[in-house]
Length: 296
Image 1 (cartoon, helix red, strand yellow):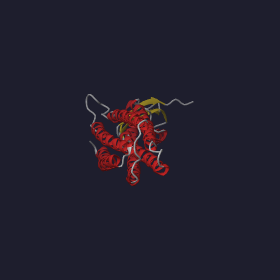
Image 2 (image 1 turned 180 degrees about the vertical axis):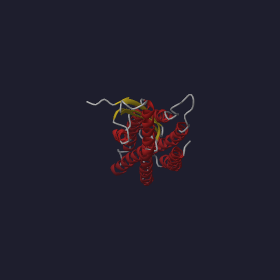
Image 3 (image 1 turned 90 degrees about the vertical axis):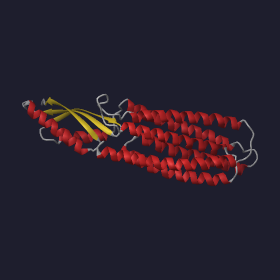
Image 4 (image 1 turned 90 degrees about the horizontal axis):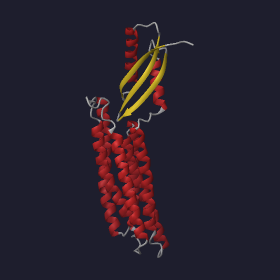
């Protein structure tokens, strides 16, 4: 593995480890506080944190597989492992959302005591911690353009939102007094809908990458600008950019003087390949097709 992709893998793993450590602590705290404080919303929140830990390890495996260099059977590398694991993580989250929703409905239909006031303190700490984690991992995900890290960041943001919903539900119950005991369960039900929505968005992100959805138009524009500036290139035709894990693969048609020899066209194509790869460290391979330029 080259230095560039090794560094990206290392940064991704560091972000995952940070989240795993935080989730281990938070899941323990939320689960304990939920049982002692009689809060279904807090228990649901703890379950989601436990699933985040499992998902993080799945993401870790996906990163490891996607970073394996190309081989004879996988000439484009193993980058598709990233969106595959992303989709698997999304399905797990959808299952978690359905489970929490079922338990919340059961609790709404079953009379129970009001959650303890101290659970609000626990939730405040959870919300702040998860929001900080979400922003840090989101920043890394955007810098590395990793769908897997986007999924991990979505988990942290989802946890923050579900904790906020639980906070509101418990606060309403405590302020409302007798008769408002179920507000905590309604908050858990609302939280499950947030988890389901975010999981659906994450699933579509993975599906789009599996179907080779084109990266941002700005990236294609940069490739075209770089290739067009190479001496001997009179124009450009097709430009396709594919994302495979951390790497990018480019298919490019260049137009050259029809009077050029095969050797001259070949040399120009090599110059284009070198220029495009140097312009973006994530571009692993550039396939250039040479065509004659036709004026008018």
